[in-house]
Image (cartoon, rainbow, N blue to C red; front, side, top):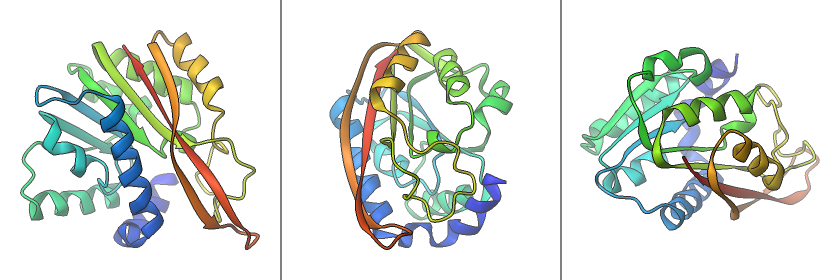
Length: 209
């Protein structure tokens, strides 16, 4: 169901200036928090149209960009061709259901942005990330801070109204990650469904394997 929603939205996804600003801020926050290098293999969960992956690609050895939406991946694939990006692999994947597709691989960096609140069981995703992360690898999760339900006009596919960063950090620690930190990465200022202009903070959580 969620993948169909994003399939329909894919063609116009990059036309939203708020999304572009968010991606720029999250990319900058990841670069600031993680010592990226050309030897690192990365995995993005919920890559969408690749707004973050295409910016991080020059700083990494390779990236496996995954999403449940074939429509989103098609847009990213067109960017890869147009920009002649040779180190991005796209894969249609539900991490919890299809993790065996990555069973023989490990990653130095696993990251996602605005994905976790669409996942019914974040704990299961965190466990999968722990299994796929190389020793001393980095986890980076950007998502909404806890909100009142006014952020999304359409609640289809929304499983969580953001997260309390401190509580999510505790959950990440319980999954076996170390050096867990959270910091505010961005603030989305937008008119919500009640026609009120509101600020919606976005945090970046980082941890080590």
